[in-house]
Image 1 (tube, helix red, strand yellow):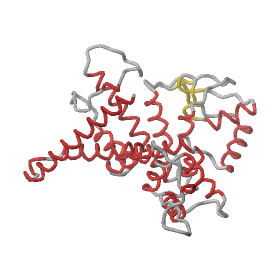
Image 2 (cartoon, one colour; image 1 turned 90 degrees about the vertical axis):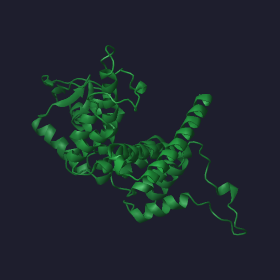
Image 3 (spheres, one colour; image 1 turned 180 degrees about the vertical axis):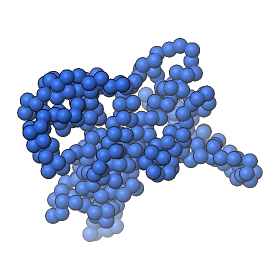
Image 4 (cartoon, one colour; image 1 turned 60 degrees about the vertical axis):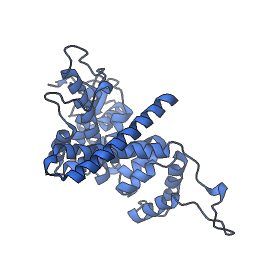
Length: 325
């Protein structure tokens, strides 16, 4: 159970990843919260984990600025991923979430719970070893079936039930989350505007945008900022993203102008592949859980051959990665 300490003014730490999971308040909401805290004091404790804020960032900022004492509630998490899962679930229960933020949080919760499940599976499969968050889940063998293992499908189904969606949608949202985080690395402002709903970008558009270079994404953000409207609709962003994929033509011939071509990004194709692999894994998991006896022999043979070819390609790719490491 969380423990609550008496009210006082103390310095807490802010983790950027935790902070970015919290829905930003509108100006009117922030001013109302500020007025309430000045008038009534801080009634709700700020939730922390090892001195890091997991809920109450806005209250902490206002209380610190105005010298208002506050209580803290120390949360008990076994790992960073457990803290992220709690933050996501807590935020998903809030009102006024944009659909983009909701998709991102569901995907983030799913990705974090998969890591927790892998650690638990590794720990259950050994007689002794570390019990903290330092457990090397990277050594987990996905082909290993351990007793009590919480599979990805079961995790997706539980999160789906909690949010009244299908387990396939949860897996789709996890891909969306990965793409948003890739955009976040290249252009943080763009990612925040997508999650806030200011820029309406489709699922496919987000995946395509994640593959572009930082310069291209930042350029798109500047173009959208220059428009007379504070919000960008799906049609606008779709046209802009499609235009980024087309090289401009010169007036003299049909060849693209070299100076106008987008900057080459060696990571783009690799990132695109990385974002799509989880969907392959999800499809394979669904087939594994189905009754293969009902599938015709020719269909099973075709799948078997395709998997062998995929396995060979994966081995070649892994070998190439190791050589370049």
